Image (spheres, rainbow, N blue to C red):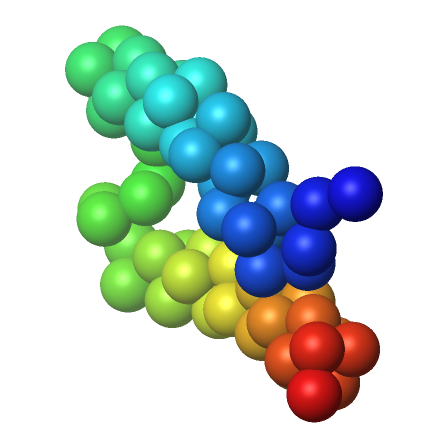
Length: 64
């Protein structure tokens, strides 16, 4: 059984490659609002934090 923090790290490492590829493709094809509009960029970054922080907190509680 994989512990929560290493599991989250593995999941993140696996998904970062296609995610960065997709972001790069959208930026190259000029169809992305990321880094083009400040409010959209902040919402996207905030949604990532709102997703990952509770997972980390839950994992820390389960570990401790």
